[in-house]
Amino acid sequence: MDLYDLNKSYPSKRGDVFHSLQIFVCRVCDSMTNRVIIGGYPGYGVRVKCPNSEKEWHNELKKKIAWLDKPHPKKYREELGAEICELRARYKNDIENDIKGRPDFLQKRYI
Ligand SMILES: [Zn+2]
Image (tube, rainbow, N blue to C red):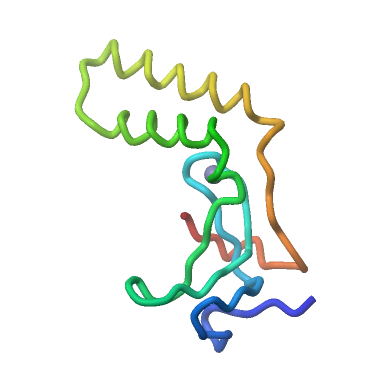
């Protein structure tokens, strides 16, 4: 399978889907993908979606992580952090990656 280097040239029509040499790591669940979609106006350009983003637990985890970014009392913060760890552990086996071809694992980007 041919992988496209995002630092060089790659398909650029809206709706084009391809796999990139670079890999993308989800900040929420740590899954990896190299499936890229070209978006249209507004927000033209490279779009990468976590392969687990439609799952309910992913949504829950995402909300908790966003909530953790807000200022909280120390104790609450710790509890919330523990909850996030627990959720990550509980759904560990449900995490799907979407890697095709042989990407360069040293070229990591975060989504
Ligand atoms: Zn994810």
